[in-house]
Structure formats: structure tokens, C-alpha cells
Length: 241
Ligand code: CA
Image (tube, rainbow, N blue to C red; front, side):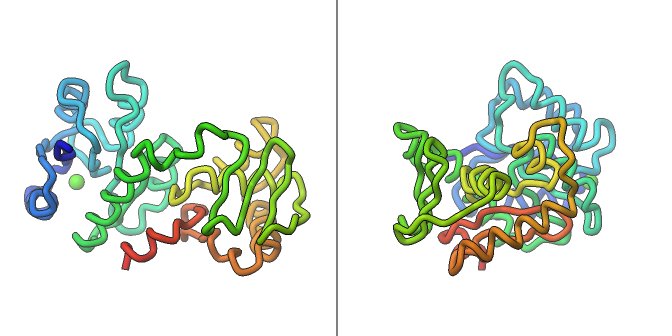
């Protein structure tokens, strides 16, 4: 297997070098660029396996880079991990809605950053989508939780549980991509389409009900403070210590 190639987009030299050091130590190939403009040039040429993107950049800011990357013909599906300043929750939410895979806030622990990178690369690995041959049905939590969208049925330890349409839609949406953070806005549009009357506040209420119905696996639906929700992967917790 060839080493994964990471593009580090960061204008602060010390932080760029810190990321670079840890990435190299973990066996990744890296390239550092210091501006959004250069990042956009490099990404279509070099096709990195993952981009670590600082949001505060001198010329083209990180969110704009993200927006433009997703519109590229080549490289538009590059996994992106955003790095934001602490307290910039609205930027993180915007970033995830623009298609970022995950985020860390400064100051971050290099160990956590590297764990996030590994998780993204692992999730993008085809084996994660092993259920693709049977797209209608997927199981989680060691096979104890089975979601069958075709029949609109969820079973917990083999017993069917009663979910409302909204709860079912939310569970299906979150659980389809374990580990991915989804904002309330994304959940709303996934569940109800654009003409929604579901508010952010109602999302929280539905999540509470859903957690209760999922029993011991209810806490798999994690609140990501200030951002939204995700369906936790059991293995991710071990790595993210
Ligand atoms: Ca910066």
C-alpha cells in the first residue's frame, strides 16, 4: 500500500510544521502550502488523499477554498479536515455543510488530530461501505441494531422497535455514515427535503426520543456541541482517547 498523501494548508508556520512533523512520523507523505490560492492549484494537480485546511487564511479563506474544491472537476471529493480557531462554531457548521469531513479547533492535540485523520481515511476506505451489495439493509452495534429502509423497519436485538417517520429518517441518515458529524440543518433537509417546517429545536426533541427508543445504543447518537450530531463508531472512541 502506498502512503497516504496529506496536503497541509496553514499560514502559521509553527502550526504547519507541527502537523507536518506528526504526519511524517505516522508515515504520511505531506506537502505544506501557506495560502488558499496555492491550495486550490495544488489540489487538482497533486490529488492528495486528504487536505488539512485552516479556515483563517490570508488570501482565499478556508471556507471559500472548501466551496471551490467541491466544485472542481478533479479532486472535488478529496476528504477535508478543517482546523478552526476556538469559538468559531458557526464556521465549523458552515464548513461541514460545505462538505468537510471533520474538524479540530485550535489549540489541538496532535494525537487527536492524527486520530481524526486516520478515521477519515479509514471511513473513505471501500471496506467501510461493505454493505453496498445490499444497500437496503445495514447493521450496526455488532449486528444488534439493524436498519432496513426497504421495509422501513429497525430491529434492536432482533425485536422491532417503533419509530416515527422522522425518527426513522434521522437514524437512517446518521447511521449511514458512522462517525460523520451532521449539522441540524443537514439533518432537517435529509429527513424532510427543502420545504421543511422542522426547526433546529425540534431536531433535538426527536433525537431525545430516538435515543430513548434505541435503549443501550441510544448514546451512540452523540451530540457534537455547537455543531450537531453524529452516530458514533465504537472503534472511533477507542482511538479518540
Ligand atoms: Ca491561519
